[in-house]
Image: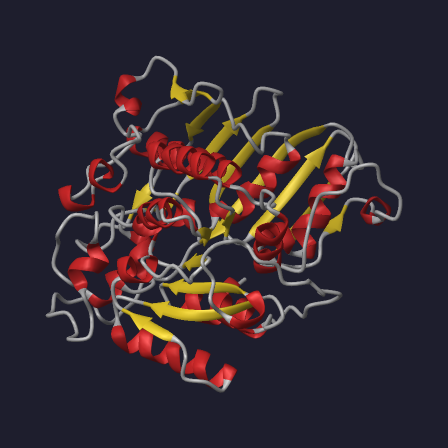
Length: 430
């Protein structure tokens, strides 16, 4: 059930990855024309999942720079890179803007808190750098802006999430799309509630190595609290959307695929029962909720707090997996046999291999900006429904709430002026 423990303990080996390096015309100066990577955000996920995977693929890429607002973390990541390559070449930055000015860097991996995902992505894309970025976006309108910038700049963008490439979820999706369940009727998703920290909860002076103002970036200026800044930022709504957008981004991506709505979304959502929010003066997102969604093709979906599981129910059969990355089970084990199938979903060893291959081939990554935006959007308007405590209707084609001005006002959030999109990308409307 502990996804990050799984990530720390798993290593996905490269099989058959023999790619001839090409000259991509990005100003690269590194020998052998490897794809050069700059790491932005090198905390636990940024290092244990993301950086360590890039370091496994020396025939494809070279990590040439690391950046973090915490210089302790940045230095640790730099040492890991240099020790792996047995060199002293890795550049180190505290301000990501300096890293983005390096014209020898082809692509960036963004592993920051959620409120920074879109601003940094946009600034990187406008510099012509390809982007692999952690999920999710922070708001609906931010996601649309992100897609517009990626489309206009033409850089490769990959959502840095592993579900598309993990066997259990890939298999479940192919089972459903190949009709093994009969007509799909309902999806049941449960998201595991994380225990709040018991230490680091007092207001204090930020560590000397931390640029806290840069960590805040576009978010409101509030006092530094250690646990709210590192990892548990997810449970404070200025930085993230809580449990729903954290774990929901994983399972609801599979839901979008199997309902045929990867580039669209549900048409309505209703909160059911009592919604509970953290209310300790430090954290404030919802941790107990029950949301009922409906798609235009009448497939229904329930997303609730509870454990880690996803279940697909059809007219003839069901398939589910309980616990993170566990083997699927079905009402009839024969339906899991995909030896013969008409529909095969694209896949790769992992999201990083696909990202690098997409740059090489000049193609769209498997988990594109538009796909990620659509999944994030259904989670964002779920949070809006919880906040307003009533049913919402959504037009996925126009991307607007139907006859609900109150919900429309919550499509975006105010940003600190120096990091507003009017400053970052004035040529785009937000």
